[in-house]
Length: 300
Image 1 (cartoon, rainbow, N blue to C red):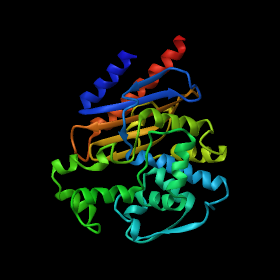
Image 2 (cartoon, rainbow, N blue to C red; image 1 turned 120 degrees about the horizontal axis):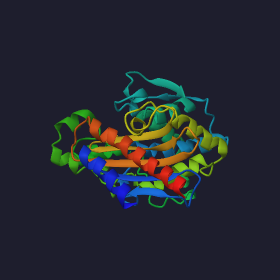
Image 3 (tube, one colour; image 1 turned 180 degrees about the vertical axis):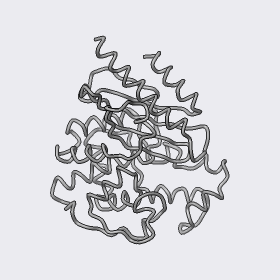
């Protein structure tokens, strides 16, 4: 275990970051695992959208939410970025399409609309039911961005991008959204436990779990975990990004059908917007972890 951990740590060090990793085979609770800081608290960033999606799918499966009902995404949620969050005009979509945008492209506005529909209590119930005691969600995207505004001493209605641009590096490093003790957070081990529960139909009704799995498999970003695996290996995952934070958690399905839950979280030494070396390090670390698990199982 020390050898593989050292190898993974070296990958992140070369990329200029610190990494936190946990990997396990799906449906094998007592099987081998790979961990690097697996129980350390980590900033989730948009990985928090996975339990929100589970809460949403539970509501649909229970008949408490009609997924075909259409809802308007208004200027309240327009904070910039991709999907409905970056649209110039109000957008009307079904609940299921908003959930699709939330997971596949990490649409923050779609996330917040879904979150407010299902409610914090429903999201917290997912975590409680699965025994994820160290996973904590502090509101949704608008709450996280509001904390940034407050930390930087700006007014609530100030433009977020302008406030960011005017902030010093010292101010940015002190943001609460970069501190797992003050923001939405978890541990790599708890996130792989969440993924295992979704992939083994223990996170909710089987139809709810299948819904989340299907959407996660359609994620559009290939530059992190996916970058470490060849064609034919399926990836269903969710990214998370903040200044200095590059994350991804998901399930890797090999051509032989065996599935592995992998959670990779990083904290870079730089606040640069683009960090391709760190992005690719996530993929390399995930591959090393999965290859190690497969070799361990064959050996046994």
